[in-house]
Length: 315
Image (cartoon, rainbow, N blue to C red; front, side, top):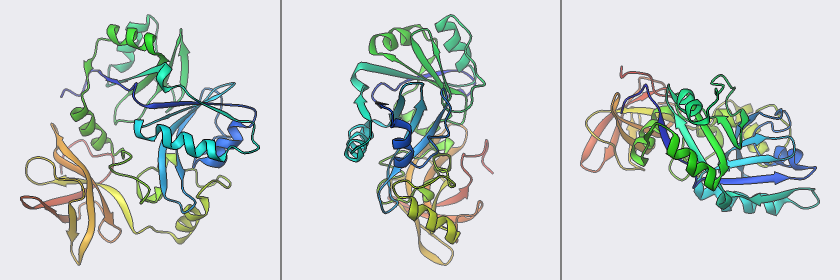
C-alpha cells in the first residue's frame, strides 16, 4: 500500500437509521454514551449503546440535522440497535426509520481524499471540518470521518447517486484485507472482533464515544463507578509482533508474573510496521514497551505493547 494517495471503500452495507420526532435528541441523549444534546446542527460524534450492566451493545456515529438525527453503524449492528432503540420508545415523540436499503455510502481516505472528492463533485470540499461534522453538497451529505489515522470522508446519498459517484472517483479500491490493516493501525476496535457485549466500553479504546460528565443514560452507573474507582482491569492496546504474519483471534497473552495477561482480538501485517495486533492486556502489563508472549498455533511469539493509534515506525 502507498500511504499518500486516496482509497475508496464501499460502505453501503453499513446500517443507516433516521430518527425523527420532537423528542429525538433527548431520547438519543438518554440512550447513548455521548452528549447528543450538546451537538449543534451540522455536527456529529461517535457514541455507543450499553446494557444496564455497562457492557457494550454496539458503537455508532450520530449526525445531527435540523429536523432529524442520522445514525450510522456496522452492518451487523443495524437490526440489533434498531430493536433496542424501538423497544425504549414508549411515550416519546420519536420515529425510527431504517433507510439502509434505500441509501448508499462511500468512504474516501488518504492525504488526497478531499481533492479526489472535490474533483468528482465539481466543487471544493472543506478538509478542515471537525471530526464527524457534515455538509450538504448538491444531493449528497459529506462528513469528515476520522475512523482511520489519516484524512477521510463518508458520503451518503440515494443508492443510485452513490453508485454514480463511485464511478467518477479517481481512487484505488480498498479491499477488506487492506482495510483491516489500516483499522488496526488506527486502533479502531471493530464490533464482533475487538468489542462485544462481554466488554465494558472503558476497556475498548472508545474514549471519543464517551462523555463522562453528561447526565443519566443506559448503563451510566457502571461507567461512573469504574471511573470513580480510578481503574479498569484490562484495556485494548496495540501489539508489535515478532515474526511474520498475524495470529489467530483469542490467542492467549502471558507476561512477567501473570500467565493470563490477556488475549489478541485482531491482527495482520502492515507494509510499514510488520506484524501487528490489537489485544486486551491486564493493567499491570499494559504500559508501552512491556514485552509479552503470544501463545499461538505454531508456537509462541514475542509481543511488545504500544500506544494506539500505532506509532509511525516500529521502535
